[in-house]
Image 1 (tube, rainbow, N blue to C red):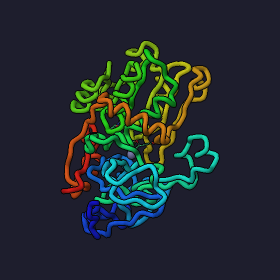
Image 2 (cartoon, rainbow, N blue to C red):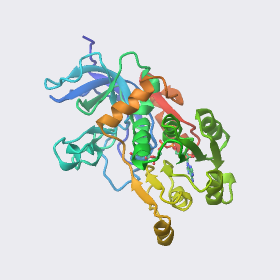
Image 3 (cartoon, protein in one colour):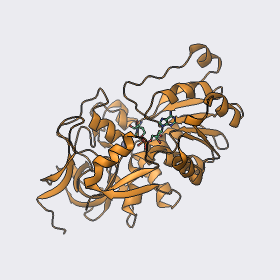
Image 4 (cartoon, rainbow, N blue to C red):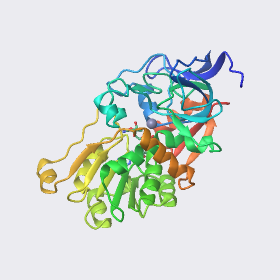
Length: 349
Ligand code: NAD
Ligand code: ZN
């Protein structure tokens, strides 16, 4: 039995865009169907930045502890919990809980549940040392896993793995990743390769180009240095990619992907830019018979499957580790687009 302290370190904000305060707060107590996870590492997703800035028309809890890529150890559990024991490794995901009895939950579309609880958004998340998760939704992480490296899989990995499946792309076909050098993109390249796809990465800057190439893109295009991106993508993929995963937090690449996607191809929206819309010219949409669809994190099965690729040593986690107290400077770098891969916070610092 590990001793659970009464207080812990966390990063809290009281209003959107307000100070990110590293301070002591009480350690929460799990309810009957919940586990308390001693979070060792937490990835910083661009969603956390959107949440802090208040970018979306979906209210957050305030004050809020953000974070939804938390990897740690179960230290307490409610009396209804049967799927975790104390000492097990577990992960905090974006989808903290859902009703499990609505039309969407019943069909495995748990993220679409109207009563979904969202970590680091509607409930406190993983930018703290002890976080609560509904046991049924917490990610089971195999014993012996490197908790820093697995953290980005808990949102970025699950999300891109699911998005590729949603695209319907087949082995041997082209997959374009718009935003390839970021947290989601750098994992999307790898899941794509593992699924037998030819991956085209689109992003900007030497660091992101190198990362994307090291992780397996067959071609990388720097969008800032390419005057006619649409023509270039069509040229290098000999007719356009069969699927595009848009993971940029910007609107423009979505519209472009509708223009360069191959006839009969699929454009998947994953990135969530503020006030964003996808514009696709109707004539082209019809004549090319393209599909435009959204993909939102993943369900419990997607979680297990995405983690399995990682556990078998097939995914390289492109992380840089800094202390939890440094969240504000990580957000600053992310805002400027200067993060290649993912930053992970060590909650002990
Ligand atoms: P990130 O900041 O790590 O990466 C975004 C990347 O997009 C950066 O490398 C940036 O250079 C690149 N980019 C910007 N403009 C571009 C352009 N015009 N063309 C190509 N690339 C461009 O962010 P992240 O953590 O990977 O998250 C990306 C987005 O996905 C965010 O909006 C986040 O909220 C969203 N997200 C959605 C889901 C979901 O379930 N749909 C899950 C997680 C994150
Ligand atoms: Zn996320």
